[in-house]
Image 1 (cartoon, helix red, strand yellow):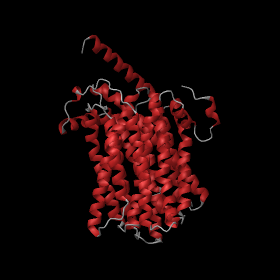
Image 2 (image 1 turned 30 degrees about the horizontal axis):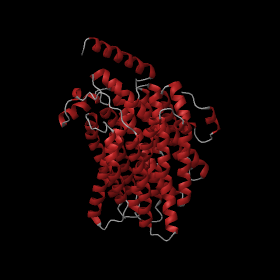
Image 3 (image 1 turned 120 degrees about the vertical axis):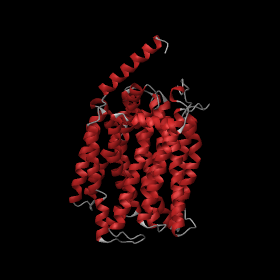
Image 4 (image 1 turned 45 degrees about the vertical axis):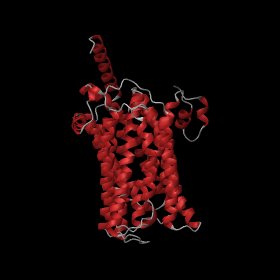
Length: 479
């Protein structure tokens, strides 16, 4: 489908205009939930550790452990929701009920995480850990079925990239709400004589209502088609069948290489998104309004790059674009540790470099996971999009937990003082190390993993052709 001629007049993003003019509105309805996903995900990853260490008074190492343990629950619960949704025969559809029934609990728990809890010491740590675990379980309950749903909407190589582009545009809009708006809201509420804890709580309510509402919208708006579910070939849901699903999937070499790339990138993403508040606050001394403006520019850059990345991926292949974007960004970010990025031009250059890696990852990696579904079907003769796609968020959750733990432990080791308005030179150096050197190395490793990834458009079409021939032969034989 060609873009409408009038889209050339839009300065912001042709991808957004394309989404609004698609003949199939289901694709845009599907993408709306990605906005809620991004807002909550970005908000928790960017501000929860900062909130706990600066507002709640939790020591950095304990706060890092809280976030790491909570994310492990996301990883552990993910397989259950993948296996259950793969086998679901609910009257509302296979994936749809999970979005509808998880949205409200997700928003409620988020509000509790940023509230002033009436607990002290170790009890506060325990309660925060439980809340964090509950949040990530509820997040997995919606996110994994929603992600798998995209693989079932289309099996076309380029259309899957388009779907993920639409989702990425909504994801970028959600990131503005989760990354940019909170600091502005907290500053404005503070100027209106609200206390800092109350300002954060009201900000969280705003984020929660909008995010949960977008997830609920997608679940209600899409009338899921009910194709033959083919659940008999998967067997009844049990720990044994669940373990078998993942064992068979992880034996696929292309999937293992994707996992390596995801781990490396997500450590980078977690370090930069969580550490940038420390950089902006303690290293650069920016105000809340300035931080909000920077986050807004970052989100706008991501949306602006969506269409170029889509076109390049269709022309040169997803793998090639990922190798170039992740590799060049990694080398550049590593090198910037040895330059002065405490001025606006250099900081802008840093953010532009990172947004290239970020846009290519969030836009193309999920679509690449969709392609593994056909590899799995060809090798193992079963359809289980939930299992395959769930490995992405599971891996992201584990890698994010590692990244959070690295940041928390390194800050504490280098003498970061919770609640202090200024930090020691050693602590400031630790903040910059986690902002540049480690992310740069991880991005280079992610690029190397994608360089060895064997699935291109040509090989994908060969797999699809082989599947069609085998299915046709099975029909002739009445299998």
